[in-house]
Image 1: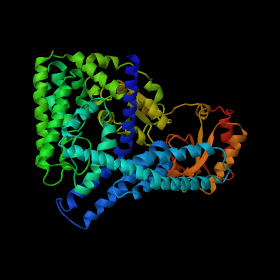
Image 2: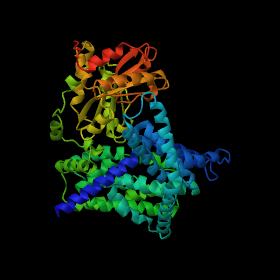
Image 3: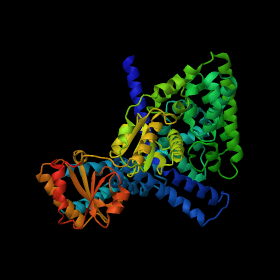
Image 4: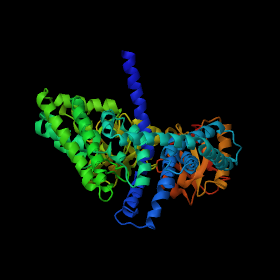
Length: 597
């Protein structure tokens, strides 16, 4: 029995990771889908302002632009910009192989492209003759991308096309048989288990996009995004709940329905698993209502707010969409009310445990658990894992809150700290983003404790602060004190050797990343090799400086630009890439012979 449970848990984690990976490819491109959806809703023959000329934009955007964006993001996740470029080029193979939007194909070829070029670069690392690095880099990426494009065109494309048509035909059979409401039996529980990303981005969106490109809308976009079932459950708690659940439900309902953060109501279901019946019944009722009114959306609403739903609704379908949301809310509310009345009333401890369970299910801090902290949990959260006072020994200009998607509780945490920073009169930028998009010039990165390792791997030179609760962490006050003390006493004494001990990557940078900077990199690489040091030396353009560079060497006229791009690295300014005395000084420091205080 234990082995079976462990196997199920492992399978669930794998599906969650797969869904998170798909989300990582699609979410950054959502603005592109929204732009396409708006153009489609406005200018196609059945749109608000039909225009034959402007409607020509819709087809190339969905067939070329959006798959290439997804392919680029898929490759970039695997191997940064180089992987993104190969992934985007390889995606053209699946695009040209079919006359329909190849979103699934892009989700396959993007990561494959990034993975292949990453493996190739690893295989030839240290084996390329000095001065030939740029030649090898450019031709290897071009050749590999070309071969993958041919593979995608002849092999992957036809397979994806067959899979896409099979899935679409299956969905059409279900729609024709009026069985689509039964999809809620799978979708609503999957949302509670945080498996919705795999379902939404892996199946619903690709088929829905194809339907929308042909018919101008798709009902599939409404299956998972309908906020009605969750709203009905929360309304029942507002009227018939007790204690902490009743008190917190109004605020949660606003964030869920208007803000589109669905996961925030999951603990209320986990506290009373019978409420899954209400969620499924509400979801099925909503889908049935959508079918009766024959409505759909032009693109996926993100986040699942009622405002996003209405914005993506084509002309003539607003009444049906609103009716479906209200019907789902009503049915969910009625069933939830009965369950709450006849079952044992829950207390604050039950809700807290349910919120903690969402953390276990999701694998990281959820928006719900962040908002439902009792005083006891807040006291526990005061256990400091790192000494922020000792970490913040440098001039901080940019603080980033980071999570998987770059929204929800991390955005709220950023807003809280931004207000504190402004009140303290500190000239510090505070914002939020996803871990995959962490900016290279971030000085401090704040993440939930379960995501800190990923953030460190992405941006090793920044100061990382791990919190248990984005909305109420005692580390914010400690960090502000450290920042204010740092402003009062900005002279920081450090041993230079301490900084040189951990140097693993040196980058020569210029405008184009070639020419004399490549030669300079070749010269220093030979010196490093002869000294037997395990330090990587390479060259690139300033615009493509990697976030994990420890030392950046530039011509004196370009040093300021390099510092602006990568402020956390150590910068060395030279007058001549081919003959600088600073190379020997650097070698001595790398070998630990200088101790400067």
